[in-house]
Image (cartoon, rainbow, N blue to C red; front, side):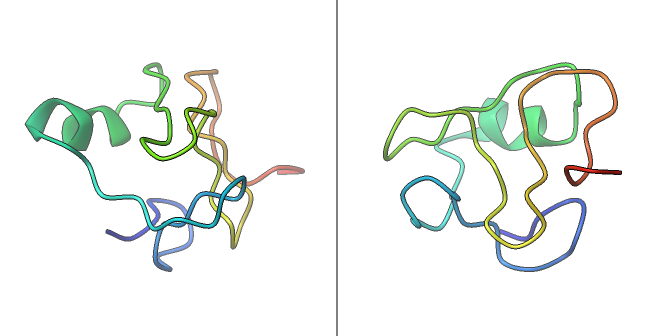
Length: 66
């Protein structure tokens, strides 16, 4: 699965595990910036390892610092 913001493989910045949605609802949540997404491995808010984009449900999304 690729990051929506940088198109690199979506890996959790917290634990380094590649993100794979566990079902259709999790997959669809990635495209909705108002829905927070948690890493299934460590439970933290999913943050892209490469661009640091948080999938935290906050308005704006995108890489940190933008």
